Length: 268
Image 1: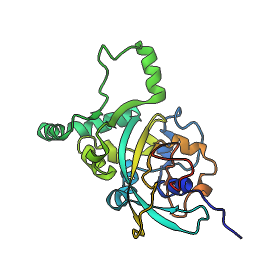
Image 2: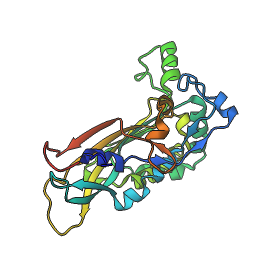
Image 3: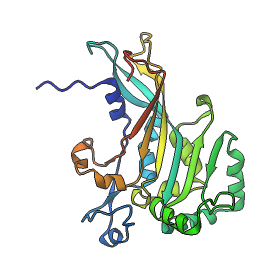
């Protein structure tokens, strides 16, 4: 049986989709889930921690994620192009109980440590945690705001990288640095996150193997968008069959943007 030929774009998405090691909630924890985010009755609920998600990017951040690329129309010649991931943006919305827990952890840190981390932040980066809104920011009445918080959750953390590509550090290094101030970046679980939680990962090409020749049109950069909440996992009835061979929860891209990609080029 001849296997179906995949496009270079499909190869890229498959090679850069994290498969996160997972755990199962206890029955008591299942009963305490936010019913607005998890309305389906399930005997088993699978989840991952954000720390385990970032571990998927550890090796990619150091050496790049290898993507097989066909460099001719016939598909007779293949190279492996390596891409390094960078955290472009992230917003984490969680429940009030989870938020309070993370606040206690963060507030227990020393003021000196907090000041040191602030001094290391570049002006081009925007990092914030929601601790309530000022009078200028509160445009809804209290009842409307409460209703939105129930559905969307509370904004625990957000980050948008506005620095140039050459000024960025790989995703794993950036997350480790940010987690010193926001421990929830490691400890929060996918079941604690609202459906509004998302992140964007930028992928930049660094080298290809073999390197014996110069290949044009391999400079395409990608931006992948991912949801991090288990709410969407509940909607995937065929999730087990769609996973890669090794055990874990797939965190596929729901959106994609490209830079320097041309129609007809052998780039993914």
